[in-house]
Image (cartoon, rainbow, N blue to C red; front, side, top):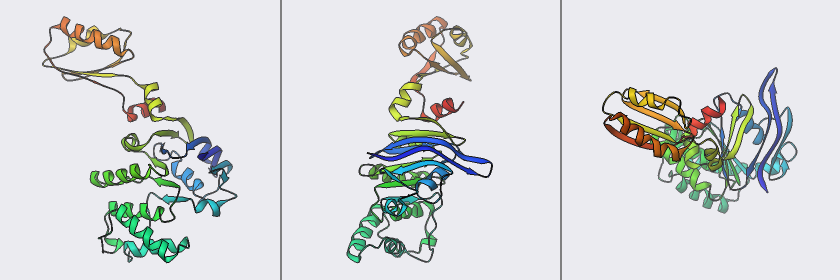
Length: 303
């Protein structure tokens, strides 16, 4: 069974269309990257999937249950971390998680064991200060813990690494990767490098409409363009002139003494580029081979 199914989902605010006939499927057990620039409709979609907003039309199913009809049952199986989670600043982490456990009616024995486990998981066990004194990273980790207090099967995350420093981002991403071993995670973000690191399937949204949905490997294979970076000890003008008009060359960019060549034929480029360098007699300092990043693919798909 799919964890999430969205069928022709539309949400309007007056004359503005925030989500436009969106349809996609999230496999159970996947870490699903929900991508799009700011204003693409990601948060609106998340609010519908978590029951915080109603669609104007269309349908959203969680484990086969219509959210509009079975919200109470569904809410027991999902957890949600909003982009800017709110806390009672005077509480400490354990107090706050106890409060969240009350909302789900957990017994004392069950909640004590779960809170201890969660505090250990998010590395807040030994923190005894009030939440109002937490860093942004600590608050995000506590937000993850509250989203898991009901032992949720699906975790909805809205920009969980936004505004975090590199250390905080790494900590949260490591936790997401770990959680993905046992749960379905719907990860909304505009930070493409985060998705590339932890997700196995992605959907790209732009202006409320689905642009593409695919597993990450298939997406890369479809749009892959090997990239060769050549750095010379002097001006590469003669070399770049030799590249003009070659059918296996997609694009050439020159940055001072460095030339970046995109190709649609890896084998030919590997064979011919060294020959062209030899013809120029230019001293070659560096030759590297790479491929398009998810950010490159994203820009290419949206262009």
